Image 1 (tube, each protein chain N blue to C red):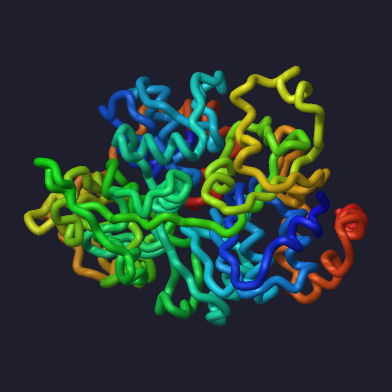
Image 2 (cartoon, rainbow over the protein chains, first blue to last red; image 1 turned 120 degrees about the horizontal axis):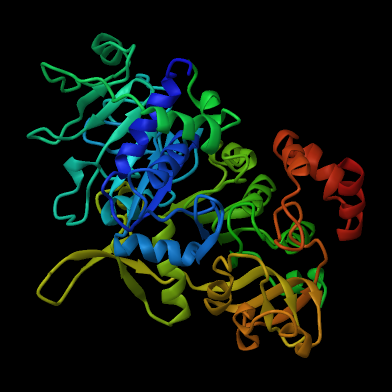
Length: 239
Length: 273
């Protein structure tokens, strides 16, 4: 089998977000998180619930097992039985996330999606993030509009948790005394220096940084032949 | 009634809720009728899609209440973006769940509902009028008191309806169309086809009867009335036409497709794709 690509390390890093999650809804946003969630569902987290991207809950083979229109999806969020992986146009050291707009909110330089469900997600169920192009424009000192709530603004939020941030360079968490972002693993082929250069805030870097784990041969086969045979993952992360 | 008759009941300055979600089952024939009318200065309440993009581009929106605007397969709604970036209207930006609870509060005639969303986020900064409420029970948790999103009028599109206003959806998701109707003083329901009441449940389960006639003011038969958004299972999104909408400057798009009536729109859209 050919060498593991960066996109495939990203898939594995995303899949790991749902390890041991139990019988909850995995809500991946973006191609690689979707491939990752389906990989987790087919391997180490078979209890996960997945949607078809619309209103149906489906098995890996497409068999419909349930109905989850938007109104029930929003209700499920508040029940907490869900781990969502959202995108982030900007994210800061405490995990505050922005997908609304760039610049002054009153008259933005660049209007983006809007806050969507980020405020309710972050206060109710575990929320991770996926950034396909790690850069100083995304990993910023301060986000322009706080949509997803970070650790420094979550005082008293009893269900707030940001398990991980996955980028094309590595995996990050908030396992630090002040809950600021820490480099948890590097994807093979990436250096600490590279990550530091692409991050506009000071990242916590432990003395020993592990590499993101290798996919098993069975996982690689599933990714390449079953879940994403058309290679959509490579269009999100090259190399 | 016709789409133009429904829209003739609206007045400038009203608060109008628009059903559907993103680029899915939007009452586009009613929106097109609205664009033909002189009605303006609207407060629009919507899970935003091209309804918001068109009304914003045409300068009909004074204030928008929304959590997002998207074309789904095209993530960013270009005409909405352009209008926002030139500061064309005021925005009440709330979270998707806050929005739903605001509609529910209105439907239940409550002034607000508590919601665990918004706190800690800049939704609070950009909506300085939002208040919080603390649980009177032992937990003493603080919530956002999401105010009722009461509507002067609601516009929604469904698959089938009878003449009385019983509306039926046949796709996988009801979105929030029943809530929009219940939150409004007047609701106008367009549908792909008006059928006899008995026909509604001939081949579909009774729980597909999403909208009940007591919450409906007028029914409009509008075949392809959600075009170019999706209206499953009657038709999917017209992706080619949506791309054209997204990439054509608004004055040009408007002149080519929206200058005439619905029939002219359908003819022009048919030629274009």
